[in-house]
Length: 210
Image 1 (tube, rainbow, N blue to C red):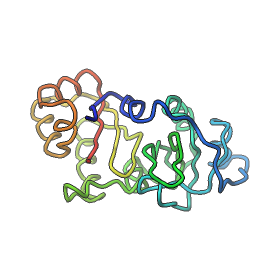
Image 2 (image 1 turned 90 degrees about the vertical axis):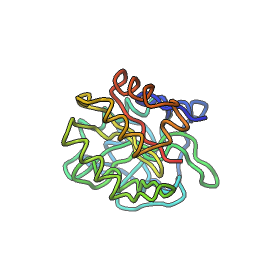
Image 3 (image 1 turned 45 degrees about the vertical axis):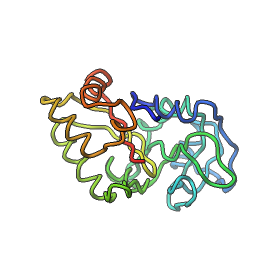
Image 4 (image 1 turned 30 degrees about the horizontal axis):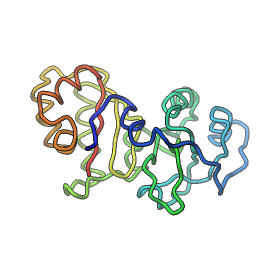
């Protein structure tokens, strides 16, 4: 059973045993470019694409590297303070189902204007719950307007975010969160009260649709 967790813990739970890979399809960085930033911060080979659909589809127009899961969030923090205007940086695919399977976390810099473009770039949806990418973004925008959020990881079926403040009516929010993403309770913490406690304690949300 997958567990709802704090920032990055689910990432580590899923992939703690995995390391980074050297990657094909790399590109030579130009100084001051997103490629150069990725190369300088991560010391990894830069790919001229990022992936969606559990790593099985390559998307052009942006750049990515594969880094160890345990260092991905810290590296992202370093990149975000330097990312060029017109780009967004995020952790993308971590659950890679490609053949051959790539081990590690994907760190992405791709064109975008705000954090909601991260969800679009990752092509996140909840197909089993009839929720499109745009519908997910609509809900995330509502949260952002109410209490502020910071989306830092997104992939095919997952979005991770930090809360800038705790919702005032936490029981009501937790009930709505469950309705929006049932799996974090049904296959995670087990009940709404535990979900409410986790949100309050961690100040973070792990959205995952099986």
